[in-house]
Image (cartoon, rainbow, N blue to C red):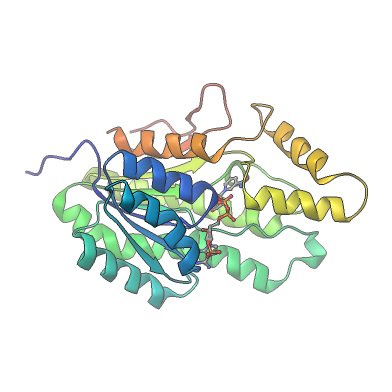
Length: 263
Ligand SMILES: NC(=O)c1ccc[n+]([C@@H]2O[C@H](COP(=O)([O-])OP(=O)(O)OC[C@H]3O[C@@H](n4cnc5c(N)ncnc54)[C@H](OP(=O)(O)O)[C@@H]3O)[C@@H](O)[C@H]2O)c1
């Protein structure tokens, strides 16, 4: 009989080079996790990892495009070799294409489903057999309120995030009795490159400024403003730290709460 640790120690964080993933890396390093950070841009990953290593934290990096299943196998192998058995995976890497449905291409749909559904499923396939044997482990999926309700001009992204939430529910149903906790963490709009890029695109159409567009997005959140990446990271660390099993946790509420009651 294994005793679950109160906190996973070896954690893969995808999309850790900026935004929410970088904030999660900083927060989990401070909480004592040994980290493997993943994104495509090796230099940007190094910019996240170097200050953490200087502060004495154990942090490895691996540049990979997570749309490629072979790259995901390489990430897992690298993490195990560098850091030991994997106790948690934070599936955060993502892109958020936005356009009218008539401009939404098959390539946009394939990219969003590859990153938000197929990559987390591949990590689960590769990592959960060992987690089940040990009797503990955690998968945290950076989903979105777009996984819980519909937003206009984001049909590929909203469909993929609903897929991510559905994947989390299925994995939770399958794995929770084996001690593997699965979470879908659902923030509303977050102040990051994704929302700043969307605001700039709206401003380019000439009807408003990027600042106004950005503020209007924040007001669409139930909490009436943008979340910060640090708030999302604090929620991720809270979920990984606590023992109740998943599954769907909505940040855009006062107070933030589980949508699905933990089993
Ligand atoms: N911002 C929001 O309003 C918001 C709200 C709810 C949920 N989310 C979700 O939160 C997650 C992070 O979003 P963010 O706002 O922090 O975005 P961001 O600032 O644009 O960061 C995205 C991260 O994902 C990595 N990435 C993108 N494509 C990748 C690929 N093919 N392979 C590997 N890594 C890849 C990026 O690094 P490289 O470009 O170097 O690969 C970067 O590190 C996403 O899943 C997003 O859907 C965001």
